Amino acid sequence: MKLFRRGSSGREVADIQARLIAAGYLDAESEEARGAVFGDETDRAVRSFQQARGLISDGITGPDTWRCLVDACRSLGERLLYLREPPLRGDDVTELKRRLNSLGFYSGKEDGIFDSGTAHAIEQFQRNSGLEADGMVGAGTVEALLRLARVTKPTSVASVRESEKGLPTGGIQDRRIMLDPGHGYPPDPGAVGPGGLRESEVAEELADVLGGLLVDESATVLYSRRHGEYLSDSERVRRANEQTVELVVSLHLNDSTDPRAGGCSCFYFARGNYRSPYGNRLAHHIQDELIARLALQDCRTHGRAYRLLRETRMPVVVVEPAFISNPAEESLLLDPAFLRSVASAVLEGTVSYFSGVPSPREEEH
Image (cartoon, rainbow, N blue to C red; front, side, top):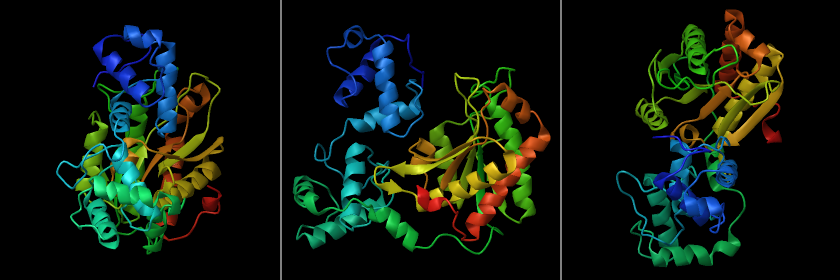
């Protein structure tokens, strides 16, 4: 998909602006919207939308932001929802799953995807409400859900239910782990440092080192892509789901327009009242090890709704161990010893995760 940003114009920009207006982020009387020009107002609207959705707030409308804009145009009750292939997606499905989870009918991850778990939860709700248990979400089912809105609880049963299933224990041996080096050059180098270092190439080198360490621990390692290969986010999701891996570690680098910005951070899936207990724990373990080993700024862990986090069926953590835009940290990324320290930190965090040990800071978030 073509990227749209400040300076873009035309029919596609008009479509983006119409969706921002419908979602309440852009004034319908905006001069930019009337002229289909992507200027400062549209940039601010896109950034606000991205921030609210747990996306990277860069003002650029790419595939992930576009998918979320399309999803945002759906309200619960506007269309019939049911199980089909490919699955129905949208904010109406997210709202449906949130309401079901709040009522105690476990519909799974609040990811906006109507899957078999959603259909099963609907049938349970319908039986308990005296409705025909057909798994179809029409006017009668929506009305029953809305009637119960005043008794819904703020905590999502999805997080509670997944925690009750038990976080992994038993060690890392024979675990199937996918490493996902971000981007892929050509055509996508990711962020580029002031000295010309490409994020995609650092991610590839880091994946190689980490993969070797994991194999030494008797884990089974798969890679979403190899050197010089490019994958879209949707293809990364598909490969992870098809390989039935137990977790995915996605390797990226942070960047900023401020060359002084630096530090390491990790991201896991969270949306609304839902937080992945598995992803949250893994992210904290890896972040703890990064801080202990790298002596960099602690930029902490954060819940986000990136597509790779949102649409996969296993815990996924995005690891950003440094800012490639920071000249000092770019220099570190050129040092094989530093990359090995990063890989060792991710390894030890993953070992702790599979040992079932909680992170000291896990409950702070």
